[in-house]
Structures are given as structure tokens and as C-alpha cells.
Amino acid sequence: MAKKSSTTKTAAHKTAVKKTASAKPAAKKAVAKKVVATKPRVVAKKVQAKKTVQAKAKTVVKKVEKKIEKPKKVEKVISKQKAEKTRHAVTKAAVQVEEKKTVHKAPKGYPKKDLEHFRKVILDKQREIREQLQNLQEQMKDPTTGEYINENSPYSLHMAEQGTDAMEREKTFLYYQRENKFLSYLDDALKRIDAGTYGLCLECIDEPKHLCPTCPLIPKPRLEAVPHSQQCVQIKMLQEKKIKSI
Image 1 (cartoon, helix red, strand yellow):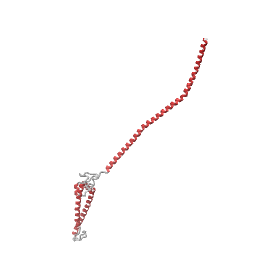
Image 2 (tube, helix red, strand yellow):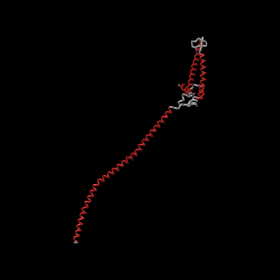
Image 3 (cartoon, helix red, strand yellow):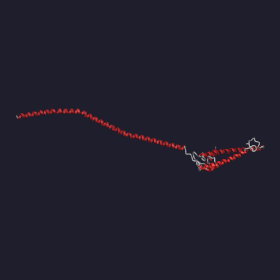
């Protein structure tokens, strides 16, 4: 009886072992099937995650590139602005230099007090010349008729006297013309006094020659002696030399 029971147990154990052995491959197959079924999903998730990471990386790279490019663009704009400002400044400076060369500041004339002094000198001179002209007019008239004497006048009967009289009349007439012209020069001088330009040397207004101590103003002694003068003595002498050399 004891042998039978042990044999039964052994057979049952063997059967159980066989079942277990046969069950293990089946379990392994089931697990393998599950792994095979879940593997594509995991791979897909990993691929998707990788793509997401790559996309984020690309976005970050683009942002960084934009940040890098932006300062470059700003630098270009700033450099262009600086270049434009520099060019504008250089152009403006060049224009100012040219203006200084071409357009100069008008020199100041004599002060009002001196101009009034010269006005008095000119008026006195005009009065003197008018008196002289009046005397010359009297000399050119026939004392008997009161008419101006001409070459056909019977005032001198002798031929020699007629020649002398004609010469004297010619001299008087020329002197009269000269004094009358001088009077017109003085009138022009008064106009320059009114304009405030009296006493400025014509040759030294644009470019002072510094030939006299008061350049570009004509010295006072010369203006008192020759009130209508528009040139200093030095300039006048240079012009006369040029005329003689021609």
C-alpha cells in the first residue's frame, strides 16, 4: 500500500511538472506577443518624442539666430546713420568754407561822427565850387550884351586879340567843365555817406591789400584833401604805374 501511494505521488508530480513545463512556453509566448504588440507603440512614442525635441531645438536655434542677426542688422543701420551724419557734416562744412570764400562779411565804414565831419567838408567844397562856376559863367559872357561869347563875337577887333581871346575862352570853358564834373563827384560822395559806404577803398573792399594803415578805409587826411576819392594813395599810384607801363 505504501509503495502504491508513493508511485501515485510520483506520477502526479511528473504530470504537474509536465504541465508546468508546457505552461512556461505558452506564458513566454504570451509575454512575447504582448511585447511584440506594445513595441511599435513604444517606438512610435520615442520617435514622436525625438521629433518633438528636434522641433523644439530647431525653434530655439531659430530664436538664437534671430537674436544674433538682429544686433547685426541694428549695427548696420547704426553704421549707415553714422555714415550719413558724417557725410552730411562734411558737406555742410565744405559748403560753409565755400560760402566764406565767396561771401565775405561787408567791412565797416567810418562811424557816424566821422561821416558827418566829411559831409561838412564836402558841402563846404560844393559851396566853393559853385561860386567858382558862377565866376566862370560871368567870364564867358559878353559884358555889353550879357550873352555867352563865341568865336564869331566882335568883342575883340584885332586878329591877334581874337586868337588870344579864343584861347582864354577855351581854357575857361574847359575849367568850367572840370569843376562842374567835380561837383557831380561830390554829389556822389554825399550819396555814399547816406549809404554808410563813404571812405571805403574800392580795390580793398573784397580783398584788403593792407597798403595803408587804415585798409580797407581810405585815410582821413586823403579824404579831407580829396573828398570824392574812392581809392587810397597807394592804390592810385599802382594804377598810374600800370597805365604808364602800357
